[in-house]
Image 1 (cartoon, rainbow, N blue to C red):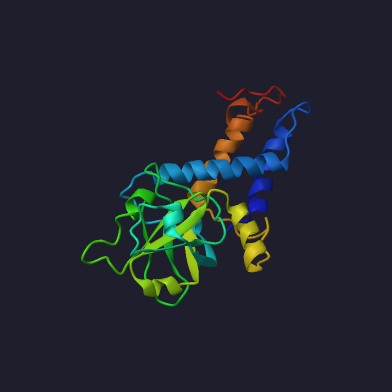
Image 2: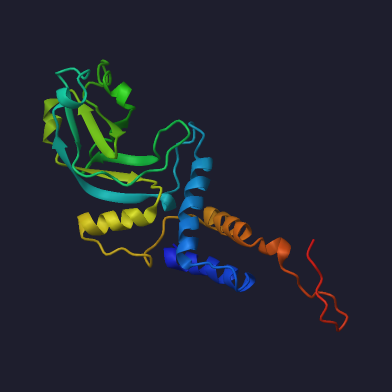
Length: 234
């Protein structure tokens, strides 16, 4: 898997020789373009609500997110008193969402082995979730103000202390920083960047064309007439 620096400098070194000395471009500009274009392309590909399979190469894992119990009556007075409400202690990095508003989550569950996947719902749906005959034991989750909330009817679930999150995040470098700060990792721009080959090629082409239009603007001398006269690309 390519690293963020490798991709950034590959694009930068393609663009830099093709622009005039008066034009200023920095590697940080390219890195900003990469993260924005990546997010745009992924959102386009997964906008279909029926497309549920997410490419493994796009996924990042945040392990052992610490969870705390919260007083539901203070935050969501409409939530029935027989339900337990919990949330992550930390705000999580922004995830890419489908057009429906559902984040691209591959798996979200307790950090314990063989834990069942939580069911993602909206905050409005959370009030009524778990009232059915076959889902009373389930744990439902929703996102509010950057925190992940868990809601369940089973008091035993109140003992959950940590959760794992596998998702597609809007800015992978922010996940690097989050993991370094909270999980003791040492990720940086030379770490593998979550990107598959198709999106890598397309975003590179988009950024280069938007920055300089290299395919349409750069003249080349392909006239075999011993002349230095360039032939303009059409």
